[in-house]
Amino acid sequence: MFEHIQPLPEDPILSLMAACRADSRPDRIDLSVGVYRDARGQTPVLAAVRRAEQIHLQHQQTKAYQGMAGDPGFLAAIAGLWRDDASRGEGDRWGLMQTTGGTGALRQAAELIARCRRQARVWLGRPCWGNHPGVFQAAGLALAEYPHADPAGQRLDGDRLLATLAQVPAGDVVLLQVGCHNPTGIDLPLPIWDLIAEMALRRGFLVLLDLAYQGLADGLHADAEPVRRLAARLPELLLCVSFSKNFGLYRERTGALAWLAGTPAAVRAVQSQLFDAVRASVSMPPAHGAAVVAGILTDVGLRRLWQDELEAMRLRLRDVRAQLAGQLQAAGSPRDFSFLLSQRGMFCFLGIDAGQARYLRERHGVYVLDSGRANLAGLHAGNIERFAVALVDTLRR
Ligand code: LMR
Image (tube, rainbow, N blue to C red; front, top):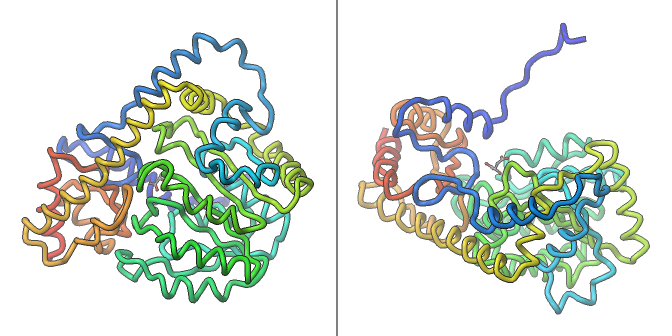
């Protein structure tokens, strides 16, 4: 069976994470995998999460199966994160299930699309998250591309984005990231979201939203505004949600898939297809992370604590961006990095190629993806100046 099987290239993000961990230089700088780090370079368990876990462990009565939709308390609690009173009219047109992380939500969405319309193409932004293509191809779907940013990945290419989406045929699917775009940090302004909603209506394509960083761009409520706007106008929508970043629950694999359909009967039909697909893959999602999220969102004090911690993360990311732009200038950067200030979240493109990324790694112990994507959350007062000097040295070579 295994005699002729060939090894595949490693995942570029996760293999770099492992390479950095294996690097024994004490001053190495890890800007590889997208996890938040605090001002001491740690990815701590949030205080709200720790308390919710203690309460959960004290009160947990059973570990019996929960069912394919996951934790009902979690599902009831999370919908309010992206819906509000104005969304009430959509109530029975929404369906919701828990998934194995945000990637699990994307993969379930891919399975659903393949079951509804095998010939549908999934349009991904260029550039997109490195794992997006593989998730949809694994479900047998073909891909297409729309431009998201300029070739350097540093500025929005709104005109070409809209011109391309205006050509997407009915029945195709357009994936759009909501907030803290990975890998560019370039988010779409609200007027562009409105134009996309109009186009989706006119052309008849399905929008799939990937909401992986809610609360880390402009705030918890503001970050979900595109979801509310599209849901108010479109007959159908898919929404993939991750709680890895905003609750710091990375390894607990906590996510959700929401779908908006034309009628309650269609909502139920979609659910039955999704349940069939999930039963044949993981059977049910894991429970722990969802119980923690539900515990936090349904307790006034824990919710306030979590929102404060989330806001602190958001403000630190903003601050790191401003500091880095200043440090690069002070280090005599031959390039303008003011674009960092208008971007959101953890990521940006440094504008370096794979050779320069290797030089940064080997000469300076700085780990960024070969594409030049850097997770700026890895920077803090203790390493930001050294990083700026290392990057300027790299850019000058
Ligand atoms: C990233 O982009 O680095 C994160 O979303 C982690 C991952 O799974 O790729």
